[in-house]
Image 1 (spheres, protein in one colour):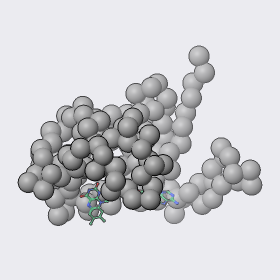
Image 2: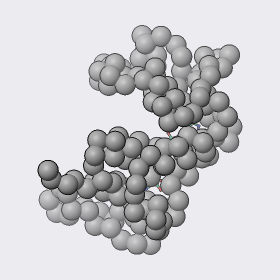
Image 3: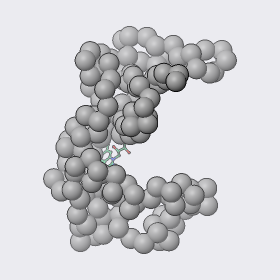
Image 4: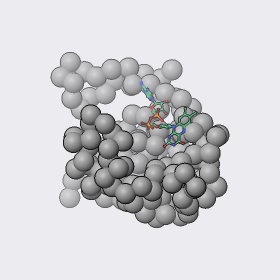
Length: 150
Ligand SMILES: Cc1cc2nc3c(=O)[nH]c(=O)nc-3n(C[C@H](O)[C@H](O)[C@H](O)COP(=O)(O)OP(=O)(O)OC[C@H]3O[C@@H](n4cnc5c(N)ncnc54)[C@H](O)[C@@H]3O)c2cc1C
């Protein structure tokens, strides 16, 4: 069987979640981030009490996306707020619904979630973290990435 290896540029929650999914499906991942550590903005999100989603029913939840709600409906049907919550629980992070209906990780911080997420996959970056910026794509705008250390 072919061994696939995927380069993920950006170690925010989106990149880390992609890495977790790929890794759980047998694909090796390498993360490249312009900063010397991943998830920095996500960590900021935890400063004032991080919420991960909202507990309201699917229909009003979808309406929050305004003009893009039709486009996003299929995405949110396959992976919406309940699935996100289950996924977070699967990482070992408990959640609760606040009085506003927002859903918070038990500790209301991003760090436990970030640690759990980053710990789900093997990655060269963890062995040798270094800041690496994506400088551009090649002329064909396809697989070749041009990576330049800072
Ligand atoms: C104060 C504050 C509070 C917030 N509160 C919440 C909250 O309560 N709940 C919530 O869900 N969200 C909250 N957010 C928003 C949340 O942090 C973002 O939605 C989330 O971080 C976006 O994730 P991302 O992976 O798409 O992008 P980012 O987190 O921005 O990650 C992108 C990564 O890519 C890297 N990168 C960028 N350019 C390059 C390049 N050229 N080469 C290599 N790497 C590159 C960056 O260094 C970064 O690590 C908050 C944000 C802030 C600032």
